[in-house]
Length: 229
Image (cartoon, rainbow, N blue to C red):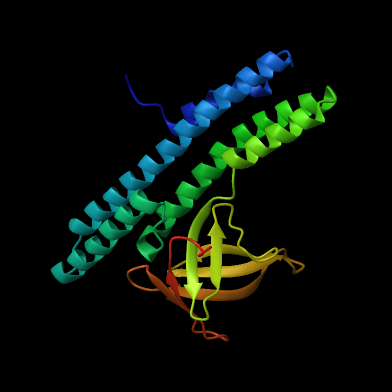
């Protein structure tokens, strides 16, 4: 049997948009289907990221770069792949940034159908005046669809910066994005032409394990698994 593509996995959820009967039983069945498809889509997205890293490794292996540079670049990519498969750290080095951007888009796309299924069930419960039941399902939704931490780094002053798959950060309204070997932080459009307002950028080290700012503010940071409790 051929493995399902990410598109095929998400297509399973299409009945949610149909005019199916909004009975509690049918909506719960749809939610169960959505959970199964969501888990499959997340797994497939992870497999695609690993495969994409392998492809980049092969590209470098067969390139015309000097042998020393190829060996060094391959070693860094192998390490980033291992970190991703072990702890969920996405690759951040310049060569692999596009791979990680694609991965996050796939995660966010996988979340949407499950979010819709939960909202449909919660709305049904609220319409039926079962507020307590709606609260329980909402709590369940929050567990199944938490903010997904992609990158965390510890600043030299002991504070933490957290970066999530929806491109938000721990700061109010602040957003982040990859740009050519850097992580750029900015705010929602605040100019007449709709461009985001730039805040700061962190340069990523060659191995992807540390960061520093070379602009107005002098920051240094190291990558960690998650903020200390």
